[in-house]
Image (tube, rainbow, N blue to C red; front, side, top):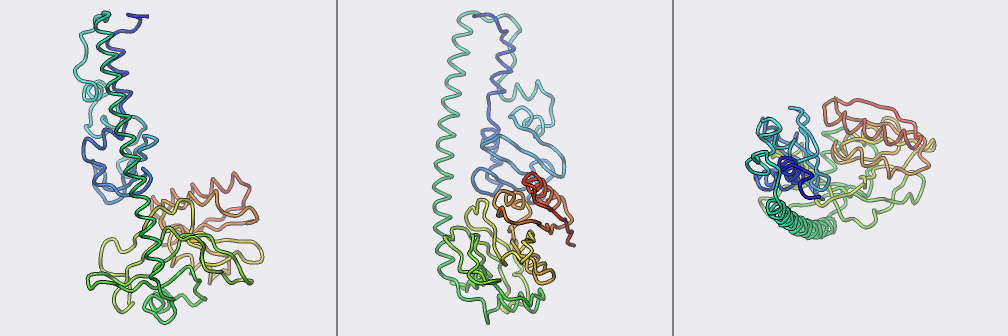
Length: 333
């Protein structure tokens, strides 16, 4: 009924209806972040860093693992960014506060029209943003397919030298790893890895990966004596979704090792003879909980001893525990 709520209630409700995505876009913060499918990470607007601030545009979540800001609505986001209290954040989002009087019918109609126009604008922005993201994703998957098509077998290349001589890998290398030569003088040679599922065509032998639409690049020095001296020197092209980099099939006891990086996963495999998957990054570890095959009996998680590694490992462990899969944790320095 008209007059049931005060103008102040409606003022706060307008602020609550604002999306965190719109605040992040309006302030130019999204431009500083990288990621896919609305899940982005980058420097924190408050404390800096490189990848400590993460957002999920579709769910409205944000957080920094260093300065510990976080939340799921625009008001808490503005409070964190501006270091202000609740009412000042509401005023930033909804304009100056009302004078406290009960709203008239004219006030109500003006408010409802303003709110409707705001909802329409936000909906248009959401549709346009999702269309841009979908087109970018399509282009990135095409780029990943093309890069994979340009690969060369890893044997005898500087990518093999990097793994053998620099990282001490002596086990057979799977067809999910290959060498990507530079196409231009300014490009770096790279070890390219496929995010894809693979078949085991013989005991311990993987087939070529199927339907490769996302790849991981490790940029190398020209002689393979280490990673390229650039930042970043590891790149994921296109969103892999839940897919891992499969490096070795499960062993006879149906055990699997999951690590953040390719090198760590290969090291775990040759030391334990467990099957091996690489996530490609700490933040992707949790996503594998749903795609590890049902017949796997035990998973050993190898994670780095930093916040991102611990968070990813714990998320994966919790997901596997819910499925009844035995979990072991190993920390890597």
